Amino acid sequence: MHKILLDIGGTFIKCSDGREVPINSAGTRDEIVSALREAVAACDCVRAAVPGPFDYGTGHFLMKHKFAAVYGEYFQDIVGVQDCKFIHDVNCMLLGEMAGGNGSSYSRVAMVALGTGLGFSMSIDGALLLSELGSPAVSLYNRPFRDGVLEDYVSKRGVWKLYGDSSLTVKEIASRALQGEERAIDAFRNMGEIIGTQIAAVMREYDIECLLLGGQISRSWKLFAPYISAQFVQAGLKIDIQPISDFDNATFNGLKAL
Image (cartoon, rainbow, N blue to C red; front, side):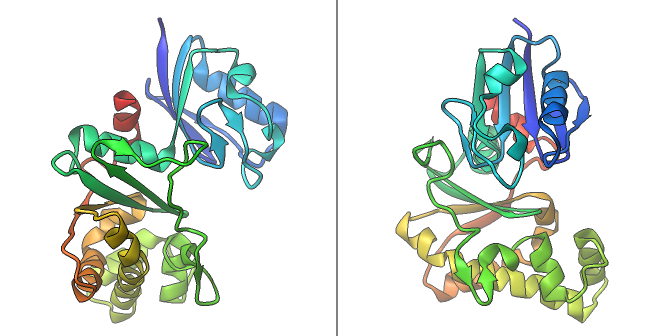
């Protein structure tokens, strides 16, 4: 059996054999199908982390903002491989952390994944909390907040909004914060306070012991985690906050556990 692990994003498919296959999630059906088939190559067993909405039990594409050209189709039919299993990308990171990372010593763990968007997942007694389709059971990104939704303030565009300048990368803004620029410090402080206040009720409802921070923005976790913690303390919660153990391989670690 030739097995491959795939981390399917909007611009690249990262493969466990080291390849990165370009994919245009807004492209034509032929473009998307060609990239998926190239990623699978000659393998007859696929384990894939896929963003949602997606039916993780059947392999059914349900996205309209990405991969719209293959909406309604089945991954297995597209690539010609029937031995496939799928997992939501944030669930995948949490699964890996529960198997052998910073979540492994806790029984009730949540993860906030910060990058292009806002992801959220929870695990209770070793089991991921899932929706009927296999996505995270609790969704936070689209919760109403101020003049939009929470993801508008807690994500890459959230950092830009709070900083007031989208001409810099988040990494560059983080660098300015580390160098002492007050404007940059305030952006991360504000994001941390927003996260803490907005997820405290969920943390309490599920009696979460540990909050893990994943995604590329969380590489700068020290800039905003103390402010999440301060909001938890103010809400009467005692929750450990840690970054994920392996930013470079978090998804593949989860796929291996899958």
